[in-house]
Image 1 (cartoon, helix red, strand yellow):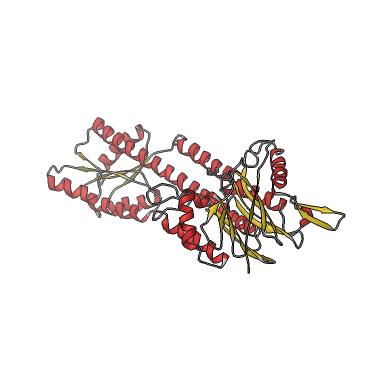
Image 2 (cartoon, one colour):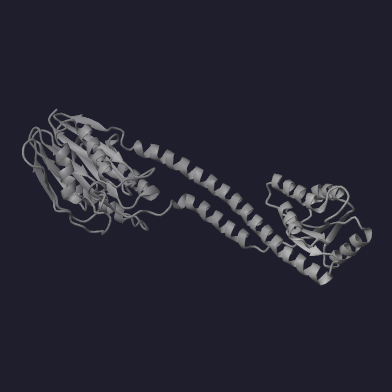
Length: 441
């Protein structure tokens, strides 16, 4: 059946987080005061450069040698450094190397654009400056328009760097929030699985000469399949296999509702049981049960989910079985001798239409015979070539395993066989469930 959407109850946190990251990332970069450091041992040249930068809107810090420039940088973290090549203390290339080392130790994504002023034109000198970490060079004497153009180029790079850093921070923050939301969802789903497992308290149970074994394997944390069994007296019992449309939380909530309708512990709440004179109980015919469930589901306004069901009532004295097949895969009879065969002609699922007439089928079992109810997770399992197993392929697998006399062992073997034939790395996108009735201890 089709896969249901992400749980709406927790999906709102997911949507809110995505909306927030979109708004933050697309928001304009806030204006800020640009800071530049001028490192020049010539007082006159330093003042001239500083004057240019102030006129262009920069806050300017001044250093008269390389060592002082390094100390000022560590305290103020300017985004632009203009340094002379030859200075007392650290030279321009040495200052570049020290600034790059300082930036490497920082983990905030910040960057400093460095322009070296030099009278050297040799290629080796340029290579030395680039190797030390300089971004650009400017020949002395400085030409103001050229200086402004070089600074503008650096500013564009700094703006892109700041924007990238800002978006990275926003994304990291939002991913942390999303992870918290997912962790909460995962925790809730794990608890939901525990609750859903409690809907099937017994994996097998003996009813006189009959035994029922159950298998429930959801494809995710929770699923939309349900199996169960119950009895109201010493001569009747019922067992069933239900498959709700979709998967996930929505389907799991529906299975919880259905488990309440077919409650094996509180028979007074079980819609499949009729009690007379406050003491005598009998099981309703399967078609009556299907009709009751269809009426109840159709009465829910706004609910589009439906389910398929194979529901059977067993006469424990005669081995006579009556069942309804509401859009479910056909039950499979496994006689003690002879070939296994399907029974039933299909029918409409429960909850699709408000008024539906369901067909009832009958089969008589002899000692040693078995009757298997199963969900379409078995027949729609994918082969390595991409095709589905379907009824014929499923019958082949059942035939290979039918020599196993223990019911639970047989169900586990069927599930294991299906896992083996699926392509490597392929995960089933449908729940798998089954209920096996065995006649004879």
